[in-house]
Image (cartoon, rainbow, N blue to C red; front, top):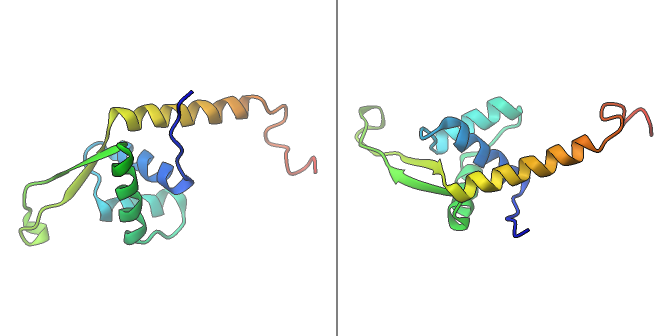
Length: 112
């Protein structure tokens, strides 16, 4: 299988872009990731991950119309491409397969 590899943070960013369904841009992504994971995220980390994902062809970006809330500036909005969707599906299948193979998935720490 020819599969793309994602780091954990790239996967989280890609999933969050998908969840925001066309409303994803740097600031809102950083806020949403922090809220969902409980870990602090800096805007430059999000921008770096988005750039890598765009170079890999997993997300695309378009400029929004200017908004008054941003002083007439436009937002770079991100969305997941078909390739990004198939990559997320592959990652999910691998994880689900591995979890299904565990005999006692919630007793791992106890069995040590």
